[in-house]
Length: 110
Length: 383
Image (cartoon, rainbow over all chains, first blue to last red; front, side, top):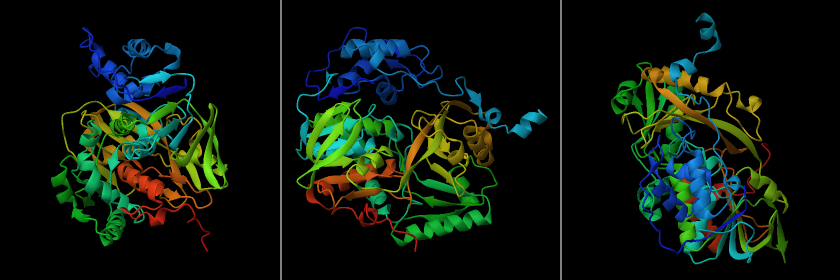
């Protein structure tokens, strides 16, 4: 992760015409919400994810990761490569608890 | 806002806080609000480790009496208005904690825990299985009884941590992330230097709140705290309609968790084998843990069998040998304050810890909250 020095942002938030565009479809997060969070202090993909839930939904960021990284990169003027990325979390596709909880013995019987 | 990706011109401040988790961010906020210039140093990013991975319990019940004053102070004085104070929705809900038992032995254990908390003034009592099912109607008939603490609750640890961070910036703190602290140094007997892979920083007051990494940092000025790493996992379910607001746990710690404002359930725990199966350095999720937790959950909540799991992740505790944190000034290094070894139950007390830490750093002792049992020099051989 790149070294980042963060301070209070005294400039007012400047809205953009397409701020209501949905970027993370699973968690319904808009471009404006991401830009506002960046304006107010978060700086990395991980921080945007934790604050707004982008990439925490059913697709785990398969749709929005590159878009979110592009927005952070443009807002902060940084290369995408230093902004972090999403960690794939098991089980990737939703699985019902009963299936996940089957013990080795039960699996053998089935 | 971001001002640099290289370094900072001025590397001095009134206070340096090491660690960008909830403890460090909250302390940075309190100190900056008092008018101190504050530098927060973080190795990776804000809210990256345990603060971003825990399930958000704000619990007083089943706590060691040495840290119970912090838990009760937070619930009574800080949590109810914290969202307003920070300007973010911390999603705090205070609708109680049920700790469930399925056998007589479980109930004995819960009763003993409840008694010790009651002695220091916490409202926690035993309820029957039917009373517990009245509070939370989804649990199985196997539940024989439970301990019930009506003032326990939960909050969103991600919003809380980032909320403290944003507020620290708003009061003028500077946060530097991507910087690894290598050690500390003294000048004229007092703490003065923080050595990093990005140069030397200087302050008259230094707080070490870096979880397990704190041990190696304080070792450089001859201080040690018996703390080790322990991995635990949490998973999140699909979004469900609102079901109940209580936090759940069990006598045998089969699992813990609650439904979030988002609608998903956060559920966590261990397999019991984690000490032997974990790779502590990058602590990936393990094959044993989620299936084991799920079996425990279905035993208590049969209707969860068809609920979908979306994501599992793992986090790391800084587990203290005696199960409670170190929140203390260090006599051998005046100006140095420690806040780590939270042993997996730090989040709920973090707002109160930040008050105690601020007082330790400004006045030399905490007067608002009794933290006398949490000193750094309390560790003695058993006999």
